[in-house]
Amino acid sequence: MEDETREHVPVLVEEVAQYLAIKPGDVILDCTVGLAGHARMLAESAGDSGLLIGMDVDELNLQSASQRMEGCSCRCRLFRSNFAEFDEVLASAGVATVDVIFADLGISSAQLDDPKRGLSFMQDGPLDMRLDERLSETAADLINRLGETELADLIYKYGQERFSRRIARAVHYARRDRRIATTAELVDIIARALRVNPNSRAAKIHPATRTFQALRIAVNDELGALERLLARAPARLNPNGRIGIISFHSLEDALVKHDFRARKTDGIYHVLTKKPLAASADEVARNPRSRSAKLRVAERIAS
Ligand SMILES: C[S@@+](CC[C@H](N)C(=O)[O-])C[C@H]1O[C@@H](n2cnc3c(N)ncnc32)[C@H](O)[C@@H]1O
Picture (cartoon, rainbow, N blue to C red):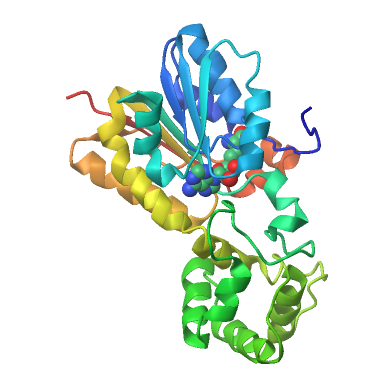
């Protein structure tokens, strides 16, 4: 039985459909199948002669995806794997090249809303943050292990947090008494360091937003995985095949933008989105998570 409380509203669905322009019979690689919102739509367009290969590091999301793909005429193969290793997944599926590579980066609402995952500063839970529970180091392990300077650098680099040194110092003092183990403890330390009330509605963003982003990126090596995906994609795309990536923060978007630009210069890609596509005001009103989504799409040049 599917747990219908596990929800995720896919973003930029019309834009993805328009720019990926799936044809009947296409072979599609969805690198972040999540709860299959995009996957289902892409698979329907590929029809019964198509193939959707979906992957995700999260076992629970994969189970939901498998249920949500039921009844779709397109053939579907799902794999628990990191998209950094998508070559191995294609080999397991017996496929050499694909027509479409798609990734909708980051996390699903189902993961964010589950306090046990420790991804949200709005709910108390273990400071975990691993999307793939097979990873050995949690956010709590990381924050208790790193030296003060290393931690400040990490929060600055991945969170673009200008108060990173102040936060790292506060963490350093707090963990001398006891190990920091929960999201609420970390939120409290950050709020005290910045002398703000975490529940105040006055601030534009929650004071823990950037630190949580930084830890999540580091725990899951999110930028490393994206770099490997981008590096391997051209060799696996058929001529005129398309790659579409939705990112949710500027560090990811910068990687995609620079990769597409460099490959355009090398005559490998046509870039189809001169500027990244963003959600309409309507979509943002319906689904606030779409606010920071950016879609970039490129096409493999035939020769
Ligand atoms: C934004 S959600 C995707 C939602 C999906 N497009 C939908 O419509 O339901 C991102 C998903 O990517 C997965 N993910 C994040 N990093 C990954 C990685 N490096 N390799 C594979 N899956 C990853 C997450 O576990 C999550 O399920």
